[in-house]
Amino acid sequence: MIEVMHLGKRYGETAAIDDVSFTVAKGEILAFLGPNGAGKTTTMRILTCFMPATSGTAKVSGFDIFESPMEVKRRIGYLPENPPVYPEMTVSEYLQFVAKIKGVPHKKVGAALASALEKCNLGDVARRLIGNLSRGFRQRVGLAQAMIHNPDVLILDEPTVGLDPKQIIEIRELIKGLGGEHTIVLSTHILPEATAVCQKVVIINRGRVVAVDSQERLSAQLRRSEKLSVRVRRGEAVDPQKILSIDGVQQILPQPAVDGEGVFIIESELGRDVREELAKRVVESGWGLLEMKPLAISLEEVFLQLTTEEKGVEEAAAAPVADGGVAV
Ligand SMILES: Nc1ncnc2c1ncn2[C@@H]1O[C@H](COP(=O)(O)OP(=O)(O)O)[C@@H](O)[C@H]1O
Ligand SMILES: [Mg+2]
Image (cartoon, rainbow, N blue to C red; front, side, top):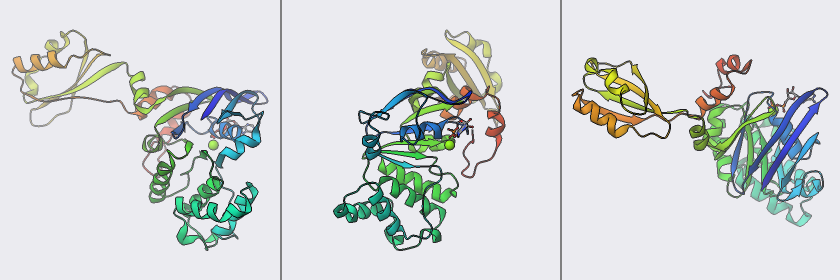
């Protein structure tokens, strides 16, 4: 549905984005994840034909953004960082106004309005002035204006920024519900947002794509080793050598434990299943096996692996975020 091919944008000497490529399948929700200044807004403005690229191109439903911008715009709904809503208009007036601008035929404006109001749960506030609405509702109006012409594709630039935690959850649920029917690209600098809403993640940092994959595969791809957590009854009896001598085991890391129990993280070579042999050793040694479970690496860890060596990201990661997510 969307093909981004080697997009680049320079501002004088600086490259805002460089060689950005990714694809989005029909009905998919893709997270465009990266710290502030990574190039998310730049990419979205190019995709929505608001701004030309310096190099590369993109296609939406097979239409090239340079050769057929009108065809592309017809198929795209865009929610910019700062939604273009007019406080002195009522929700209905504003959405009808946008529908006309976007070329919805006169006879179909009523149906388009009803559908957008319904999809964005705005029925109850249709006659209210936008200026009197809460930020969460105003963001829904922003979403409604993006989809008033029933586009196949929705491009949403940081749709939950500035909302309170309850509103964030509502908007995320709303976006999730729109997937399937619409193909969605959503930018965010908040990791939990990408994991909560999207099937596919493109990580961008300093204008370059550093990873593209499904959430699960991205984690697996970056994993250097398998990790198992093992809990035993008699922690003090454990002889690390007996575990390290198992073929494939690389490391044993003791964890804090209570009541004499022992907890250990065992790292082994990727693709090497040491569970059977490990269980055998623990049982034969009489340490009292209580639990053994694999530890999955989270996208959060992956992202830190990808970008912590980049200057400035670490300080930003330490900053608190309203919804308890990690700011990157
Ligand atoms: N009009 C502009 N002139 C010069 N530099 C710009 C302009 N717009 C964006 N940039 C730079 O391009 C980079 C990417 O910005 P942007 O796409 O807004 O990132 P994001 O949306 O991920 O925060 C940043 O370094 C930013 O300073
Ligand atoms: Mg931005």
